[in-house]
Length: 192
Image (cartoon, rainbow, N blue to C red; front, side, top):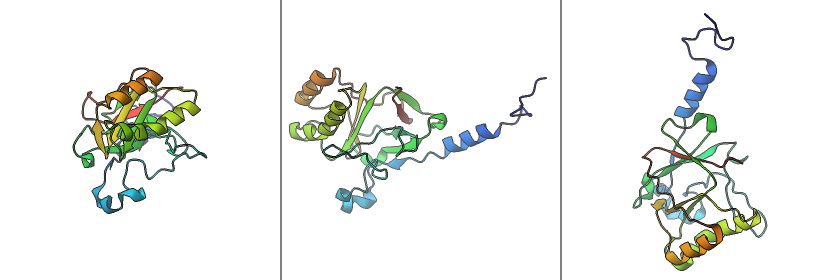
């Protein structure tokens, strides 16, 4: 019988396994739309990532990047495919080594947006996409492999045809994600 120095009793999980399991179980999903703050929605304390410090540079749109220093190396995970009630959709941050058990890994660059603006109305759609376009131009015009679009916390599966054509002309295929692989968490990681 060979014993592992790190875990002399193979029938007992080692401390790393125990801690990883505890981290996995402690991932807390928060609502994308929290009605407790509906009266103060415009003050920035009710929507998806308002608890993190956005990256903001002069004359640039604010954005969040995951994993990053602001997220302490954690990934963005989203749970929720509801298209009519944003309170039923949620998000969390989790370390790559301890994603929730049911998590689906979404590899590649994802543009995730949760805005007050819808994506079908021409002017609202342009306003919703402008921050990403600015970020993309600053970063060598890279495009996402998937687009995850929420409007007031509600999942959207399409954008207006004019905006679709505009985004497609600039970035190639616009693959709007609808989370069809089940109801579990979807966690995003772009490998460099």
